[in-house]
Amino acid sequence: MIEVVGVNKHFGEAHVLRDINAKFSAGKVNLIIGASGSGKSVTAKCIVGLHEVDTGQILYDGRNFTEMERNDRKEIRKEIGMLFQGSALFDSLTVEQNVMFPLTMFTEMSREEMRERANFCLDRVNLNNKNHLLPAECSGGMQKRIGIARAIAMNPKYLFCDEPNSGLDPKTAIVIDNLIKEITYEYQMTTIVITHDMNSVIEIGDHIIFIHQGQKWWEGTKEEILKTDNQEINDFVYAADFMKEIKEMLGKH
Amino acid sequence: MKTITNIGKYFIMLRYVFSRPERFKIYKNRVFDEIEIIGLSSIPLVALLSGFMGAVMTLQTAANMDSPLLPIETIGYITRQTTILEFSPTVISLILAGKIGSNIASEVGTMRVTEQIDALEIMGVNSLGYLVLPKIIAGVLTFPFIIILSIATSLLGGLVAGVQSGLVTQEDYIKGLRYWFIPGDINYALVKAVVFAFIITSIASFYGYYTKGGALDVGKSSTQAVVFSSIAILVANFILTNLILL
Image 1 (tube, each protein chain N blue to C red):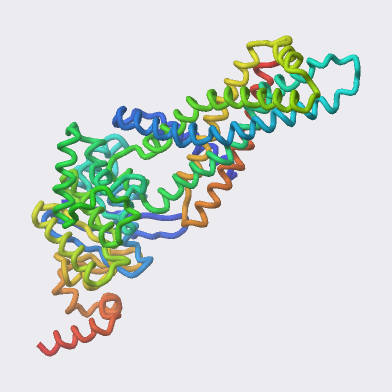
Image 2: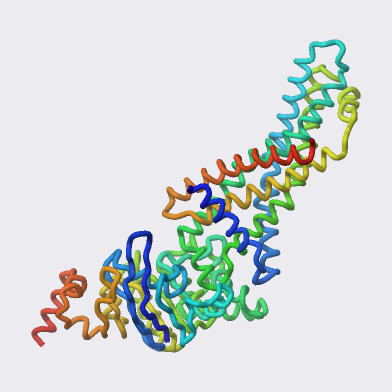
């Protein structure tokens, strides 16, 4: 479980996170949603330590990440897998080398064992026989899947996905969403997905936090978010026409 | 104020760069890769530039020696001294600041804006150590050899140009090269090479690592890396000359 307790963050004069409190459980896909510039990515970056919080605490299964020294944080970071918006694969490494990278840095595995683990992870994301390609030779969807394979290579306890569907066609986006959901349930990881994609909310959101103007505005399940009367959430959720139709259908039933 | 902040950030960066590596074997492999990128790939450019510069130096020295009182060996002597003391260590380093500095800054800057550095940090890898230390080690190890190569090709270029033009004989030129040779001058050149290699690789890495924004900002970082490493080379050159030669 990851707990966020009273987190505040400023960038200069701008107060971008205001007293954020949240709990993210293991074995669930936790979504942080919100409009662009609402502070959801900053929240995620504070949780993983890419941004330092001004006040508040981040607890990983009770371990206070915010008060740890840089070297102590490394131990927790080895338990974190992250899928980045742009995949963030290492350009100069092949697909297989990208997935093997955390293993080469932090495990005592032999070359053969690492290769086996990399192949297992690539199989898990349905990528076979692509080991020797460079990231630039892969499509956007493939890059996301390689990113997931790299993220799960170390068998992490915590998985972060920053806008996993951005730049993908709807069909591939659903494949990625389902993959995240399956992996979360299979390995009982604490998964946090940052998104503004309502398809993802409906498809995989077990627990949803809505961030608005740097504050936690709302928290609940995907069923609850569709029925809430909160104006800001409705403005966000029902911005698309097809979502309005869903709402009307829900109203009729 | 920004300059002072950057100087502070630069020294803080160096502290992380020289912290204990996670895996020596991985770093060793990275050093070999960087030796190829920083050192070996620069050899053709350095050889070409040095050869021609040595040739021009010889021709200009010969063309400007009007006094019959000056022995003809002076041509070789002046070419040697100019090459060893300034041209090879300083001018070649300034040229390499452009080639290597922009390469490093754009590589690291692109990794920054495409979140590859964030990915390293999230994994628990000391991204500064992993990315920058091998570049600094590779630079410091290869620059002395590059400068020696530059000295050799420059003097050879001078010989070919001098003899071909008929301005000096091979014997006189070589006699000039040997005349009043102080081995300490080579040490001076090598010390400068090591210091300049450190300056180029670390400053370029600094500007690349702290790039913010997108492709345009990577370009700006590359430019800043070249400008500031060139200025730092000139300042360091002045200080080293005062410390070693005077």
